[in-house]
Length: 153
Image (cartoon, rainbow, N blue to C red):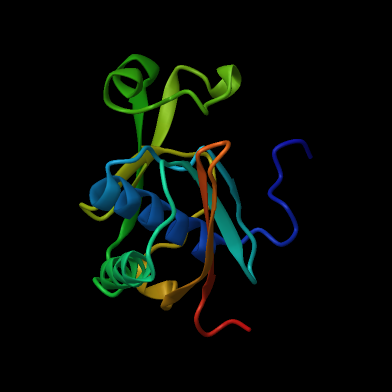
């Protein structure tokens, strides 16, 4: 099936990506990731960024993400018109065939964005995450963040 998720796609890691993205927006004023690869064992997000992160910043980012996860926020979905979505959200990643009604995923009051992926029902299902590496490509101005769930080896 064309829109079927990858075999190793993981709803917990995908929901953690939403939280990581919003935390990057809030902490560093960046846009959400422009590219990501979400799997059960480890995942990555790429951001347009102007520098590498210090270890102190990585630690603060990881702690902030985990604080949100520990709030046990409910994940909800609702539909809005494409016009409303385009006014409130970056819809550039949505395919044209997404239709006239756009699905918005809300992670409690912390994050709201258009998404076609699968999610868990509460952030408490994620468990803690660990940022396992960050790499900065200065020529492309890309910061890559790799993370995993702490209890998954």
